[in-house]
Image 1 (cartoon, rainbow, N blue to C red):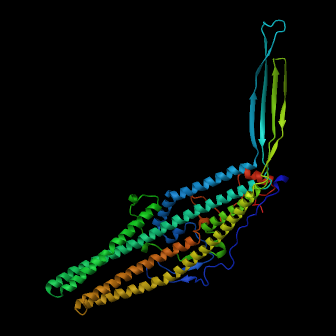
Image 2 (image 1 turned 60 degrees about the vertical axis):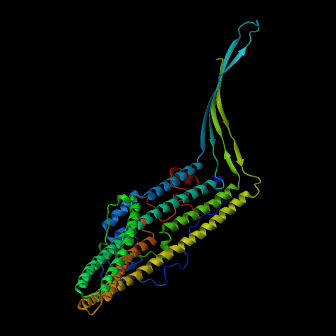
Image 3 (image 1 turned 30 degrees about the horizontal axis):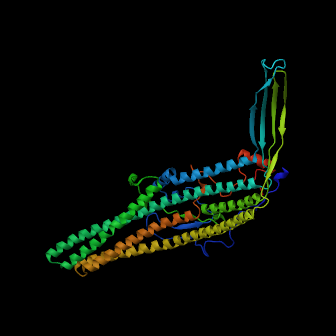
Length: 508
């Protein structure tokens, strides 16, 4: 136990939240768009409100929930992340066995013939005697972890396990956000296509009416050509929308683990969704423990810290003890026999007397890798706060934008009605009518896009806050927002912890 009391390398300390870290200088706690759009409502931020594990249920859509469930069950990225986590755990379990001695049994049987010559006659028969020698031994190999190389290796393995855990959570969050985002995008494009088809239908009717009036001599041919041009221009906007929707549907099918030809056409409309009235807003101090990408970066930092200890321990001599014990049985021609105990004690020390500074350079390389991971961690944290701040700003701005677009649509609609009456009475020409119709069409499209952005902003905020994986209970592995014990929790690790005089808690 005294040999195990020394452990080289730095003890890992989890980074604290950066001082003065925040989302913005002023966070509004309420955004009332005063919108008349179905599903839109005032949204309030609550810092005490946690992100729900099944955050997609905030939209109150059974179809979205069904899509998300299917994606989690079928997408290969989730399965690949789970296998990566299993691999890391098996590596950890294998390295934990280095704390235990290695037993190697051996058995030997060595019968031999012994010849003696008859002294009275050189030509007489010789006498043959048989002796037997049997051995059975057990060799024990044990390398005491004097400088903590094994413990640092296991600490590194545990950090790798943590990394794969958070990579799994990141894959889960990315997949669910992509599914919900694709559904919202599909609803938006479907609405744009419906509006375009509606406008095309109106244009065709007006063209037919213009052709009748031309035949009657009420209008000239220029008005008919203008109507035909407007119809052609409107029809030209439809194929790009249909292409975008088809590509978005293909992306959605891939998220669900389906092939494109397995699209059965399930969809939602924007008007069927509901914006959550209360939005979570995690404190900055909690954000760094919630985002899977931040926790993954911290796991890499922890792994790099343990690598310094491993490199340091590799510079020091390694001691291996090799005792053995066994039994032997010796018999000679049935005349006499011996039995006894065999034992031995051996050991070896391995290490370089002079390696040209290679070990030192390896340690310096490990320190540089740790410093690199430190800067990467800082970058991930900064980007996380940027994401949250951008989401908050988008929610605030798009709430105002939707209200403005609604007003614009109402004004354009009223103007079109007036111009249409004036055109029918002859006080306005066809160009005025087409201009008013185009303004109304654009206003309706802009309002639809602003409505879609309101839902997408909520998805972006929840994603930026980490997605609530710490509150989720489902078929994916449940993890906690803290790095686990570097020694592990298996029965072998428990025995090691007891040998080292450590309690069940994480060692200091």
